Length: 490
Image (cartoon, rainbow, N blue to C red; front, side, top):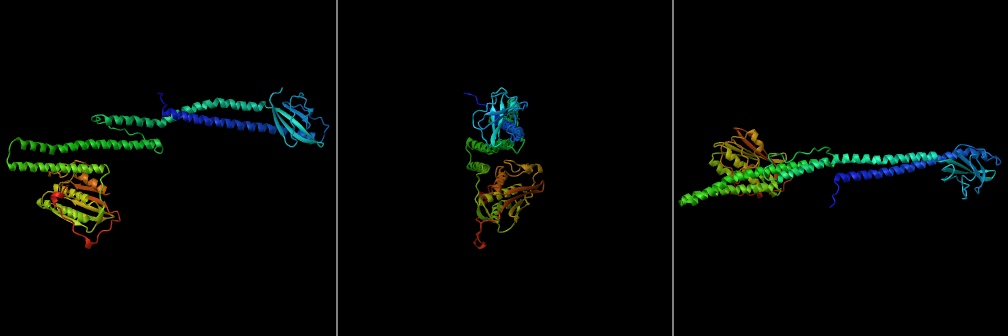
């Protein structure tokens, strides 16, 4: 199979061919224009030379002025309408002009070119004029040697400079095309290296998957392509890093409950035990299975959010009622821990959203606040409208979060080393799930924390200006009450 030319070679050849055709066409056109202009100037010179002679011949038919003419490189004949020679200049031998037997036009000047004469190539002008009532023709001939020399010089210059121009064009096009395509070559090389690192087994040894390409001129296609590939490579590298970290963290988090399940099962099967002991073991297994189930559900929710397939309903509801219901679900747990739950909620806030996910969102923050709040402390829950948005805040009096840990608290399986607290009900995924739900609702989450004094999480959700019509207050029914043990999945 023949090896095809590279893109660089094809572009260089195409560029050189196009430029060569254009140069050749321009050279031919300019040569034709120059030839026309030079010959027209020669014809004009013939007419200017003939004008005073015909003026002298017209009044005196007996004058022998033509016979007496002897001008270097200029030859004259006086002809009758039948092209018979009446007079000729002294420097012209008979029959040399060879005007021919063609009829002469008595009304217009005529021009002829005689190629093979004793005097070389001649240009002849036949100028009609009236002499004593009779039409006469003055034939004046001049050598075309000067015109031909100019045209030959121009043609020789074109034949010399055209190949040199093509060669220079080919060299310049090769340099420019190579320079223009260099980012593509770098892109191919680095993309191949990135593919090798992505597909190779094991870690890349800490080396980055991609070195950014220089964007160069961002207004041309190559520059924009480099920018696009840089962004794509950054996202691929970030996704792979997150995936590796996620797999590492998930395997670490799943290992503990699986180890407990395996150990307790082996211990229960090792020897006969009392019914009470079996019940304790089953309770422990149920608790660990519940943790695994919550973790798997959280991972599924996050995977759907990552894929952009987390579809939330947009049902009309009152957001303050959803938050009030969430507070009621954790009220028993707050009382058991001697924690006061203060609510400052604006009433009747219409909203369009998914009630199940919104309740899960609020329960995550309530669960975290209860988990890290010491006994005899207060958790403050607020909700208010503010400039086309609704803001829900959750403030606890726990140990707080160090400033260096704040940027990482929404990462999956991340736990800031705060004060000792009970095991998370979401397996370290609660805040990541909350952030995914808030983003799907078009909102955001902020955290302000002071170590030793507590933390405040603020959820901002857009009201979107035109919520769906809500039922009247008389038609509103109290929200259904649910079992807190079942609903609390934060």
